[in-house]
Amino acid sequence: MADSAVPVVRRPGLRKSLAAALASVAAAALATVALSPTAANAADCSAGYVGLTYDDGPNPSNTTNLLNTLKANGLRATMFNIGQNAQNNPSLVRAQVDAGMWVGNHSYTHPHLTQQSSSQIQSELQRTQQAIQQATGSAPKLFRPPYGETNSTLQSVEQQLGLREIIWDVDSQDWNGASTSQIVQAAGRLQNGQIILMHDQYATTVSAISQIAANLRSRNLCAGMISPTTGRAVAPDGSGPGSPSPSIPPQSPSATPTSGGGSGAIKGVASGRCLDVPNASQTDGTQVQLWDCNGQSNQTWSSTSAGEIRVYGGKCLDAGGTGNGAKIQIYSCHGGDNQKWRVNSDGSIQGVQSGLCLDAAGAGTANGTKLQLYSCHGGTNQKWTWTR
Image (cartoon, rainbow, N blue to C red; front, side, top):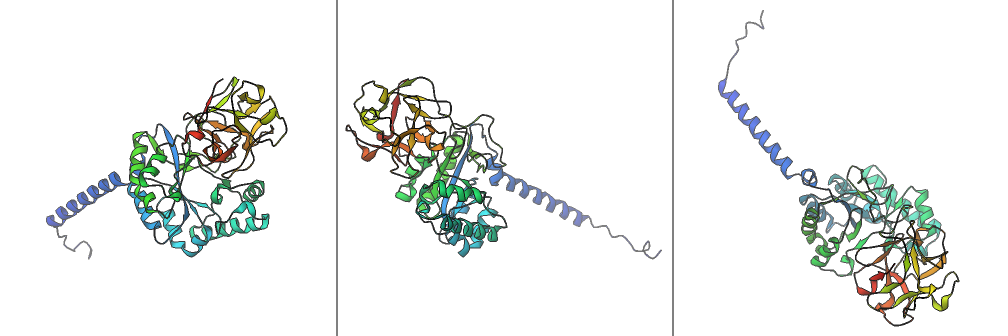
């Protein structure tokens, strides 16, 4: 009875104020949705997804600016962190994750891992796993070897730690002094599933982000995550397009060339000379060269559905390493990724394992010029015609 005796005071003014406040909150929420990166990423992704990657962070001088710029342009990326940088800057690693980025392992001190023992490699990778896990609560699933250099010893350690090795399809050359416009131009070559190499610490790289975002939108491409299963760029939720991408990064057993069937000479655009096995040798390890085209069997190459480029039927075009300058040789076909190639529409021939291009050494054009792997740069000494 006492409660029922309390008079109820009706305050029309308060009700009007509450209604106005709720309307303001609703308007603000709509504005937030319109400007959010998630909404921006809801754009037309019908042409697929690409992987934007930034190595060598986190850096106190630039990482925050990089993250803010990516978010402002509605982009997500994979950050391949150096372990000692992560150890020294755990708050920046957390900021990367909070900004919607994915975090990968890039070794602890950025050494030439192919020159180290298995135990040294184990230490480099494991310490980085621990540093990132301490900062974020979860260990990375992706690993990018410093300098893109890899070998069987390193890959064995990666497998033990449950890491997927990720190289790249396009090198922005930001580490080599590329201008903002050159970085944007490099990103403009990305196709569905492909990955671009960039770095955390360069102002030119940050300046390129808005133009990269605009270019991707104009081509109906979106920035996605890199799948730990396939090593290629897929939708941020981990789903991918229904058909295989022609750009399958390293370690994929299903990589196939973009065209196939028939056999014929592979001729250098710059030299006008053909890929040639010296003296018609069939010895494993013989380095391939340029030579005047003659139509003989040692210059007749065929592609297989597995992505191999064969000569003499049972010998494969083989990369003797994964770094710049690795020799191109013939070797008995064994199905390894160092014997698988992508024949790209721009005339380049790209190693599946390394992500590097078939290159006439020193931009040479003379008879006897050796063939090697080298970072793809679009030069005519990396362009080929294959008549089949």
